[in-house]
Image (cartoon, rainbow, N blue to C red; front, top):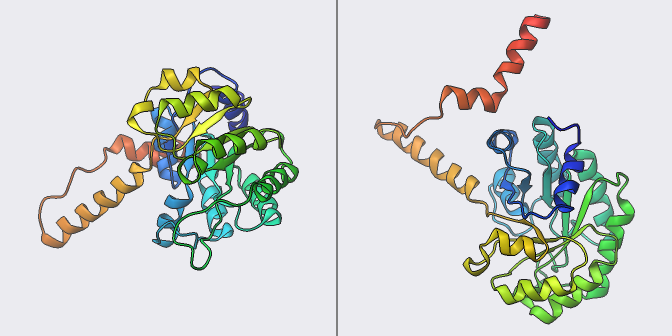
Length: 281
């Protein structure tokens, strides 16, 4: 067992040569499952958080307090390094500072701040980006707010899919000089995009959902990508499993497959609680 903290383990992954694929986690049980399987990190997304906490779509109605509370529960229950998608930092640059404070104290190992104009302004039919100057202010504010140097901060932009490759590269070059630990690009689907990014990136690159053309860990690792997300299917699968089980109960039909006793013992840390019961009760 490594003596490194979760934050230090995430930093070690960023400084390595491989591209890791974090598990999408959303509560203590899912984080423990990911850890038991051997995932190097977990990703707690704002979109999934909105579904888990509010049962609402990903339209920025979740609050920072609600998001941080769930992140704290995940970190308290597991030692897997947790990366959080902190959306736009819940406001302007000063709100970004508060977001970093709250999530750092919640125990996350890394967090992303994006430069999308959120929540979507009135009469704006499509997503749009903040001016680069405002995005830079947010990233510098995040770095200034950090108190633990091991906490990883990532500047996130969806420029590839909103404004194009040239703007994405301009933003990447600017953000990497703010003191962030990596740049998180959303919308990459082509190899030439990754190759163009690799030519200008001096810090680790993170990718969101990627297209089939670049679904190649060796290619990504060779071009400076240290983290690439897998998607948030675990929560979607859980929703379907819950619905199927409830429907079977309602109909009086055979239940879907249930988790094994061993899996439930892992999820609940039953061995630890059995030991504590013997020691203290």
